Image 1 (cartoon, rainbow, N blue to C red):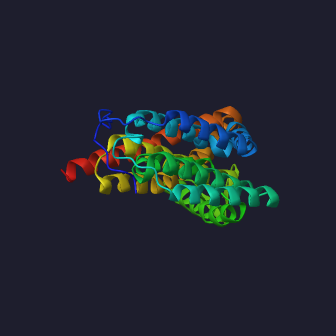
Image 2: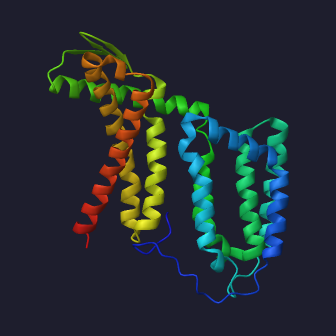
Length: 288
């Protein structure tokens, strides 16, 4: 669950500070960085060069920003190092070695997050970990969806997007024949491929809605509503993309591929976020 926040998300940096072990924090952070450098490097390459991970590129930056805002609350007089953190560090190290032997990048990324959590427990205790649990969870967005799970999710989304697009086009007066994820129009055949299934929009929109909810809403119920609303919004915007592609194919076929098609995707992504924003504003009015 997202931690409770002020509606304007201002963070109080005034709590009394203990002599924060920043030197130890930097040393332990550097040691973790050296041990997990191959994992960090592979993840960075994935975030920079993969179109499916555009949201993941922002996850470490947002997590670091939140940690920076909370810097005076991580090590306070109430924070006591937790010996159990050493056990978490040990488990992370074992998983890291197992990931290296088995060649599992996903397991290595999980081991890195576990090691970070262990380091926070060692230095700041449970109180410190509570302050940083949300930015740590955000780093899961740097994980690509496992191939097996990806295949299970994309096919239903492809069929749903093609079905909704069929209904919309028929409502607009177009003659459409659908076979699975393929739409046959009199002037164009549209195939909703995996890349157009909407999984990319769904994951990206859920990330930005999660961050928006953290900074802009204090009530947990509304935070949950914002994140949940990203699912139907992503499904709708993807069906709109297929529908508009079909309409443009008749009048301006040159706009159905390449850069114009990408721009259309970004415009509709913004529209999807706008739907979530409007749902949030409406819910705040209703639930005053």
